[in-house]
Image 1 (tube, rainbow, N blue to C red):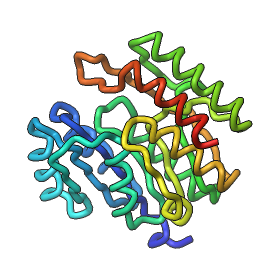
Image 2: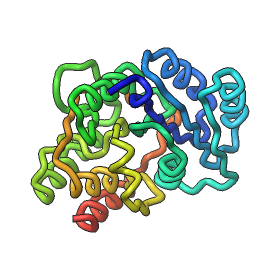
Image 3: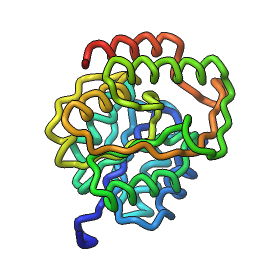
Image 4: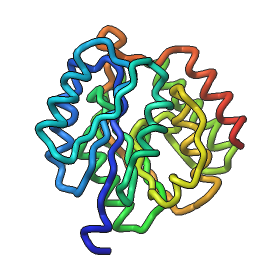
Amino acid sequence: MNSSEKRASIIIPFFNEESTLEKSVISLMNEKFDKEVLLVNDGSTDKSNDIAESLANKYENVEIISFKKNNGKGFAVRQGINRATGNVIGIYDADLEYSSSDLSNLINCIFKDDLDFVCGSRFIGSKVRKNIYLRTFYANKLLSLLFATIYKNKITDIAVCLKVFKKDLIKNINFEKNDFSIEVELIAKVLSKTNKFKELPISYEGRSYKEGKKIKFMDGFKYIFAIFKYK
């Protein structure tokens, strides 16, 4: 595979991330892989879109997709998938909970091992992790166990937000979720099409609700619903 066939489209959905967006994107741009970056503004009401526009002016391979209404992370991810042109499509949050170097490792792995899907896991390996809320930590473990039992696939971190997919596979799947349960839908529908996947250990720097964390208790029930819906 030559270099022109190794371009990655990285989708960064964001909603009111003015304190982290610039640092997150700059960190990603410093990673040494061929990329286009799709910044999807999901109705931000702070200065996030101004920051995104500044980044798009600075980097020629950064593009903004902007919506005035907050439609949800799933909606933003789906718009990014529709616009992506790279050979692989990655999802990377703007909140600095995840590492751009880990994303780079996932990108390298999907090309090197000719996989269809690679995702990170906060529950394998010995990477440095900061979990602020133990209830969230254990809830994610239980949701992942439920998914692994129902789907008979050993996915250890169903709620992880760091994922990479082959474009030819994911572009042919119809996704419908607008909320955080897109994380479950993505994995469930992709695994119904392929068994060429791998999990890699990743680091994690959890943030507090005061710092802007957005996922809520009720989203856990949406995850459970999605697990059974897409079986």
